[in-house]
Image (cartoon, rainbow, N blue to C red):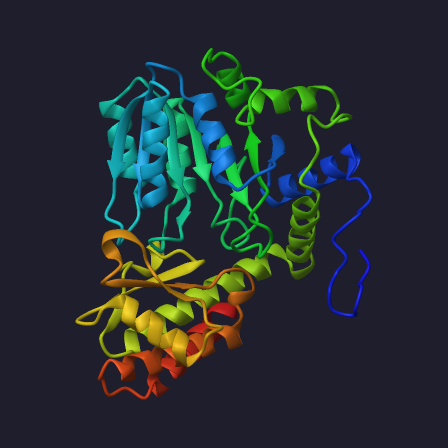
Amino acid sequence: MTVQDGTTPELLDLPPLGAGHFARIADKVAALLRTRADVVVMQGEALLPLEAAIRGAAHEGATALNVVTGPYGETFSGWLRSGGSRVVDLQAEFTGAMTAERVAEALRAHPSTELVCLVHAEAATGNTNPVAEIGEVVREHGALLMVDAVASVGAEPLLTDEWGVDLCVVGGQKALAGPAGVSAVSVSERAWERIAANPRAPRGSYLSLLDWKRWLDGGRSALPHAPAQLEMLALEQAVDRVEREGLDAAQRRHRAASAAVRAAVRELAGLSPYVVRDADAAPVATTVRTAGTDAREVAAAALAADGSVPVQATAGDLAPEVLRINHYGRAAERDRVLATVRALATAVRASGRADDGAGAVQAAESAWSAAVR
């Protein structure tokens, strides 16, 4: 890729992205997911493979257990019902996580369950679920497990095969700091069998995983359609950058960012973590209660202090009382985290609370140091 004026990369008239290069990118994603299963890189934002996986694996009349710990779990419920599944929604408080014990109880109560859907990390609510423990329960039951790992990939352990995840969906735009316009799903042999046996699984459609199965079975020699070339190249660069840093180091950096932000928030007057237990906190985003002050005003004041910090208001019913601090990708850097803490301290003072933020910055620095050891 050339440079026109010293700063702008040349994005036009690129040589074609051939099938071999496309397949190599898929293999890099498979390595990141720690899977030997087939990986399909789909040409759209992660909602595409999420819906494709659900509509492919959920049979009409079959029972599906849908774990809801945030807004994406709620979205899955709608897709499952529209496909004719009998849906059991298992909801946890958004201030915490689902437990394997509750999933086991639900499976005992609904023994015909064939599919379990679960979000690993909910960036919108700031919680993360114990996929390893839940996966063990689901395997014992014999159901398929679909996991949305869009926010967690690159930020926390994701052992797709070891945990028994049959459909694992990832995107590049969160911890990988890559593109939003391309995504991937790993598909186990059990999942392929279930999808092929489903007469309502999409075929001849952009939502069709079975169309991509033909690409896999054909030796990945001829792409089914023109690839999203820029996004594919950006995804490859994002995965390569994680490999250069080291996956363990990238995950440690995200854990340190989460620990530092949560420690700082506890020191700032009027703020507290929305997710109560540290063990339930996602390493990609921290949600914060703003007692007595509109969270949207706090977020605006933080951005007025430093427009580069990754602070935003939440959406929906929680918007007045909860704000969100993203610390994924390059935002999970020590200096960026400390800048965010300082901006929050400025926002707290703007709300009328006497807090110079020194204690919050010190707490963040200490928590970061402890987490990266």
